[in-house]
Length: 265
View 1: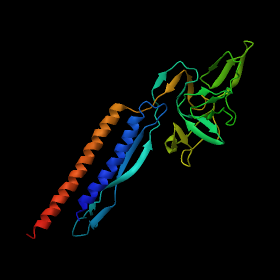
View 2 (view 1 turned 90 degrees about the vertical axis):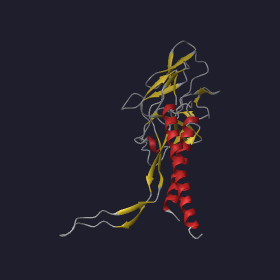
View 3 (view 1 turned 30 degrees about the vertical axis):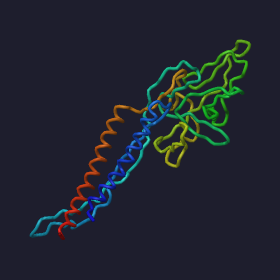
C-alpha cells in the first residue's frame, strides 16, 4: 500500500485532536479562570532509502534520502496567561493579578484554581462552588467570618478584615497563594480545579500575596478565561483545511491504487 495513505490518516487524527481542543476552548470562553489549551505536532520517524555519505578524495558528500511517514501528536499544552478582569463589585469575587493560584482544601485533598468566585457557607467559611475551603497562608487554616460581622473587606495582600458587633475592626486571616515554577505542568481536574503534579514545581509553602513575585488579590472582580475567539476561529479554519487536505491525500492515493488494479484489464 502507498505510504502517503497512512501519512494522510495520521494527519487526520492529529487535526481531529486539534479540533477537539479548539472546541473545548470555545466552549469555555466565558468560564471563570479557564486556561486555554494548545496542540503541537511532531513528524513521525522517516524511512531511509539511502544513507548519508561523507566526501572522498574523488567525490563530494551525499545527503541521506528519507521519506516521512506522517505526523503525530506532540503535546497538548495549557497556556497560563492572564485572563481579562471582569468587575462584579461582589467582595467575595477575587481575581489574581500575576502569578499564583488559590489553594483549596476538602477532605484532606488540596486543589488549586484561578477561579475566584467564592461564597460563605452556613458557618461563615469562605468556600468555592464545590464546597472546598479557601486556605490561609499557613496552608492549614480556613478563612472564617463570624455571623455577627457587620461587613468585611479583602485587601490586595490577602488580609481579610471585618467589623464586629462592637464596631471594631478584626482580622479573620490572610489568604495564601500557591506558586508554581511550571504551571503548565498542572493537571486539569474539572470544575475549574487543578491538581499538583511531579512537573508543576509547587513552592514549599503558600506565599503572602504581593510578595516575592506573587500575585495580588483584587476584590470585587473575576478573572475570566484567556480564550481569544478570533484566534480560536482562525485555528479552527486552519485545522479544518488541514483535515480536508489530508482526506484529499487519501482520495488521490486510492485513485492511484485503482489505476494499478485496472492495469490488468
